[in-house]
Length: 323
Image (cartoon, rainbow, N blue to C red):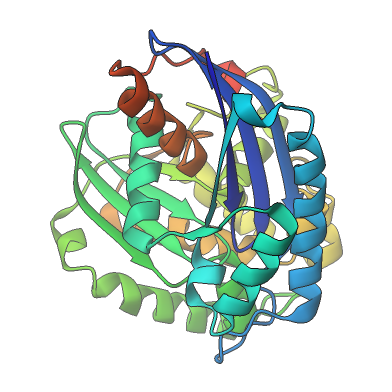
């Protein structure tokens, strides 16, 4: 039995999953931790991590370190990775130093392609999909992976996410039509530069990331099916766009009161859902499948394969769901 902790330092939140796995490929999640830290907040065009955001993030990491302290060092392996905010930061080296001083380990900065790859590995081992477009919308980036016959044939990372779209284009309270139009045009131009998207049509979108999963949580509340797990939850394009329209019609305080929408996500949810809604329209897809598995699971699954030689034996979908 091996214990692996994966720390995922994202642009909007920092997460840690501690799992144990066995030589036959079986694994169990022991603990999960998550803190909303908004590391990418106010980075601006100069892409500078701000002191307040750094402090929030380091404080969350100190709590993670305490949790790791309950495991004997010789019995646990820890891998810490960072994504878009740290990847884009011009003061990256200073942040990496601060991280290592607190956690006594290096922080690995993933490329966008690595991030997309781990998303694919996490999803393909836990969802029964054949052809799909995977979308992982984070705080400062969005990863797209085209899956054909269960194989990843294209992967790309775009420097746009829930926080960056919201801060660059949208009002925090009432989102105006003009602001939403500007954001939409900018996003469409970025998607138009992904040449292989022009050959993709009428396949489901597999969505992950906090903003996208919020759509599933709102739907579950509306339909009174809270017993259904987020992982594998399905939503029609019509239902997804209707929920988005309802979110758009409300000011910030009203958005915070929507069942299933976390209050701390109210100011970025409009921007955070825009990539998913645009891709549904662009591709003509009729269904969204939500995934709870992603980067951290992908790292875990690759580790299991490398160390045991066995394919992953995943638990039931309900075991993955975090509400």
